Length: 175
Image 1 (cartoon, rainbow, N blue to C red):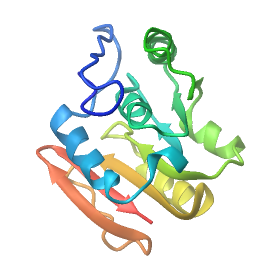
Image 2 (cartoon, helix red, strand yellow):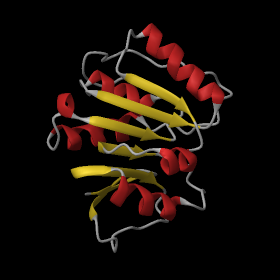
Image 3 (cartoon, rainbow, N blue to C red):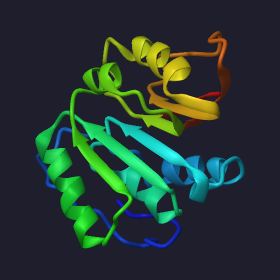
C-alpha cells in the first residue's frame, strides 16, 4: 500500500498482517482521488473516514492537504497502527478514534465536507449507515462516498450522485 499523490507521495504503509481489513486497492484509490481532485478543495475540507482500517484513505487525504480528518474504527490494533503511522509521517491533522462507527455517529454533532466509509462488504447495516450519514453529517454541498460490493445499488436514493466501479471495488457518491 502506498500513498499515490501529494506531500506523502510514495510513502508506504506496512500494516501488521493480523489486521482485520480489506484495504482499498491503489488503483481504485487513485481513481477516487482523481474524481475528488476536480470537485473539492482539500485545503478547505474537514473529512471523516469511517471504518478506517489501516488509515489508507485517511493518509491519502492528509497527503493532498486536507484541513482535518477524523478516522474511526472499532479495532484497537487498527487505531494503534494509524496513530503509529501518523507519528512516523509527522502528521498533525489526523485524529484517530477507537469507536464503533454507529456509536460514534450516535454521539457526534459534527458536520463534514467529505465523509468516506468502507464498511465490511457483508455488513448488515450498510443501508442504515447511508440513512445516518447523508442527512445528518454533511455540510451543505458535502459529499458522502461509500465503498461497497457490486451486489449493492443506491441509484434510487434521493441523494445519489454517481457510482463508479473499479474491479471489485464500487464507490457510490451521495451529495
